[in-house]
Length: 166
Image (tube, rainbow, N blue to C red; front, side, top):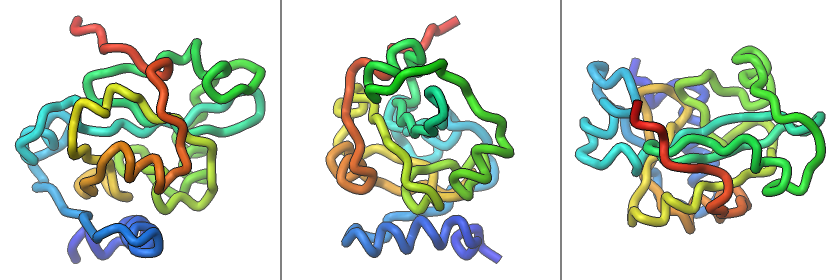
C-alpha cells in the first residue's frame, strides 16, 4: 500500500480539497530520511522545507511553522501568540494525541485539533514551500499565502532565526 493511502495522509488531502486547494500531496522515496534529504529529492533548498512544531504556552497548544534552515525562537512565542506562561515542548505522545500526527508527518493541515498557528516569515523567500503531509515520506507543495489561508496563521519574523550552522 502506498503511503498516500494512509489515514493521516488522507486527512491532509481531504483538508486541502475542502479548502479548495489542489491535491499537491506527493510521496518522496524511501531514501529520503531527513528534511535535508527530502529537499534534495525534491530539488529544492532546505529552507523551502517547512518544519512543523507544537509547543504549549501556559496551558495552550500552538503550531509553529519554521523554514528548514531556521530554528524556532521559543522565547518570542508568548509575545507572538499574545499568551502568558512557560513555553514547553510536549512529548511526542501528547503531540500525536492533540494533532493526530506522528512527529515525521506533523502538519497543521488536517490536524484533529485547530490550534493557533505562527508561520516563519523567512519562508516568503520561496515561491513554493513543502510541508509534511501526514507521513514522513509525504509532502505537499504550497506557498506562504496558501499556508496562511489553510491555517488562519500569523506570519511573523519573530518566530524563527537562522539556524546555527554548527
